[in-house]
Length: 379
Ligand SMILES: [Zn+2]
Image (cartoon, rainbow, N blue to C red; front, side, top):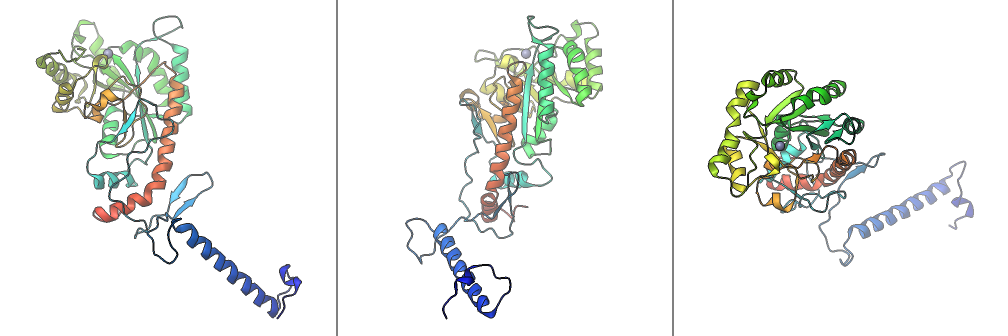
């Protein structure tokens, strides 16, 4: 039968003749689709007919551009022997390199994908503060700039977390807001917290962390009462900034290092009712022996003054010097209040978003790894 030209047009009514033409068209389209699919999934230099192992993630793109993985009980992805190295977001600072700290890949993946935990790409941005002053031109951050920084964080959806929440998050991926930050006031600055932080903490329903130098607090009248009242307010999380703010260097005697790290604990417990979980390195100084003593004393996290970027679960951005300490959780980076902080909040949020998208895109691969090497399947 010869095809009439009309068959190529849309027919108002379907005749038996056009049914056959439609079937032919559908069949040839199917053949084409199969050919295209086979061609696309075949390595360029593979001969036709030879079976190949093919990575075909079943991902569903959604309207806002974020890829949602479709979990399947039997992974179709070839299980990798090892997990890929930590993801590096495009906004990563040149001097920093992400470092992982969990050795058990199965335990890590289980905590990473547990729907009750923090979602991948959740960031913690710790910020270091010292002086805040009413006006520009004085030694410290002008109050207006400080207020603008916190307003920028609020605008970006940041929420504050305490040191204990950060330790739980970094160790176990415990749930915290996807954009979390820690505002940390170093040294002994009850007045800065009372005057500049408290009004904004009330406004945004946030907390601040006081990195407290605990020795000689008796020397200042009413200082303990004020600190205890701040602690009782529920808005101030007090952590350790050393016994005497000793700069720990290679020449600091071990006895002094131990005093600096162990000394604050009983005093802290007596005044605030809990043991500090974070140690903020005085002057940003640390050594490998001091890091080991910090662990021995029971600190779970430590903070430096290196503004390397946000921290994520099993992902800490470290410079060369911090990497040599071999304990990423004791080397957590901090941004500096007053130094382009609004931009840093934006950079960190973007790195988190990018890491989230990357995590979703890697889900099938990680699920295949888990299925092959661990007990059971990822959720
Ligand atoms: Zn200090």
